[in-house]
Length: 415
Image 1 (tube, rainbow, N blue to C red):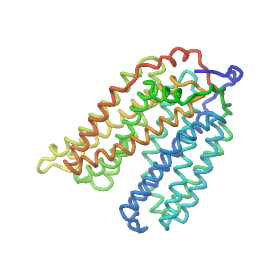
Image 2 (image 1 turned 45 degrees about the vertical axis):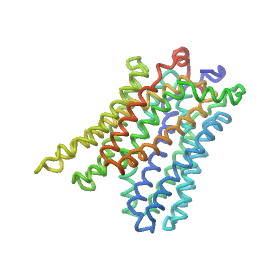
Image 3 (image 1 turned 90 degrees about the horizontal axis):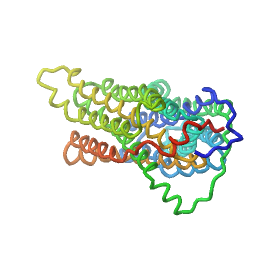
Image 4 (image 1 turned 30 degrees about the vertical axis):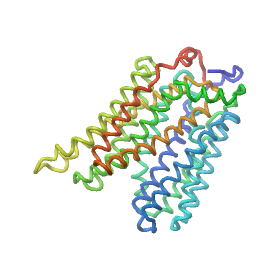
């Protein structure tokens, strides 16, 4: 990675990175807390199924179109102002939700949150890479762990907030969270100056976007996120069908997210120490996801013999959730770290934004694949199709980043 030698001597402490992790938590928490609340309260606020689907999609639609744009902007002006500006915009958009009784205002708040997250999410990823030095695995593991925590507690805390004070309280909490993290980032995140960038032609950009060092980890992240998106929706449906009740069904998602969050920092640390190589680790993670999906999809019915208690019938679903969570926790930090190591620092923002675009497409494609097949052949076969797609993505996993490994030992945090 290219380095600005005049900026390499500044010391980087853990306190400089924590606001970046908090930004990752904010986007995950905001997305899932509101989505879960919309699903639970759609009838009370007069939403049709189509209206609910539109509101759920607005956040992701904004991210699909804008993440590469804001990633490129962070390369031009540095990640810090994009992170702070995005968080402040997230806080402001959340205030619109104080009038959440109106579907149009809900849509405006949701769209605004998605646009703001499109700014601070890829800029935060680029910031983690710039400050990671030679420990990209460790710090992307921690970053992914905090995002996973946001996925885990978002639906639960969002439900509690709605029960206590309705959507107004939930959006107020999100507004305060965005403002607090923005202030924290302004104080603690060091300025990361934009690095000199060569001029890229359209042909150059096309080549960079089709290199295996970019496409491989991006496809791995898309497959992992697609499995997460499908699991969040369909595993609770499986659990409910097996008679686990509302609490037992929702808890499946929490188990998955906690498994992912706990393993990511450890996997990142093992990568930095050379214990885990990129390609074998990503392949193992994707295969674990596929196995978990198959266990959850095909074992519950056969385990539910006459007279079996609901808890026993739910064991395969919870076991599958653990495997899926572990697989995501293995594959995701390795893919992020590989991407960071293989990308010149002056275009980290654009690369991370484009990779995040791949993740968003996977997040949308996974549930669509499962749902489409399930309509024709049933939910277990829909999950089987997802397992097949995730397993196939293992062939895209790249070898260890050659460009990153050559410079990694000498690379220092770029601030």
